[in-house]
Image 1 (cartoon, rainbow over the protein chains, first blue to last red):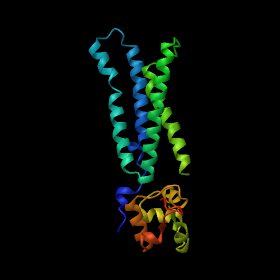
Image 2 (image 1 turned 180 degrees about the vertical axis):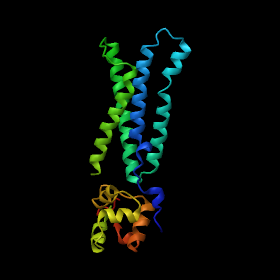
Image 3 (image 1 turned 90 degrees about the vertical axis):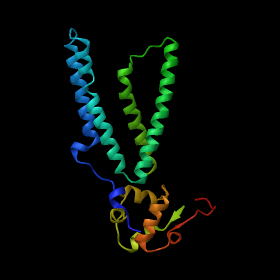
Image 4 (image 1 turned 135 degrees about the vertical axis):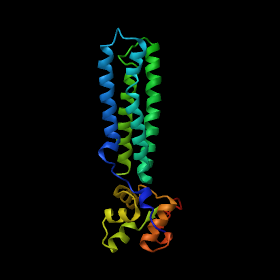
Length: 136
Length: 68
C-alpha cells in the first residue's frame, strides 16, 4: 500500500503562509487599530467601527493558515494538537469559573475581555508543551 | 502494543528520518511508535507493514496481558 505522502507528510509552510506570520500580522493590526482609535475619539461611530474591525481580516487569515497547517500534520501531530486544545479549553473553563466566583466575592482582577485571547494563547502554549512531553 | 520497528529499521540501516520519509510522517511519530508511546492507526500500520514487506502481526503484537 503506497504511502499517501502528499496527504500525511508534515510540511513546513513558507513564511507568508505560516500561522506564526499570520499571528504577527494580527498583533500588528490590533496595535495599529488601538493607536488609530485613540486619535479618532471625535470621529463618527461608523468610521470608528470600520477601523475597529480591521484586525478581523488578519484574524480570518490566521484561521485559514492554521487550518492549512493542521491539514499538513500527520496523525500523531494532529492528536497532540487535539489533546492540547482539549486541555486548554478545559483549563479556560476552569479559569473562567474561578474568575467569575472571585468577582462575586468582590475580588476584582485587572483583567478584561481584551485580555481573553492572550490568556487563551498562553493556556494553549502551556497545554501544548505538556502534551508534547508525553510523546517525546 | 509492542512492536519490532526499531529492530527492523536497524536491519535496513535506516535512520528514523529515513523511515519517516518512506511512511510520510514526522520523525517524532516514528520515535513515538518505536518507544511504545503511540500506537499507530490501522492505515499507518498497513503502510509500515508495506514498507517492511511484512504482515502487520510480524511487526506489532499485543502486550503480555492481551491489552493493545
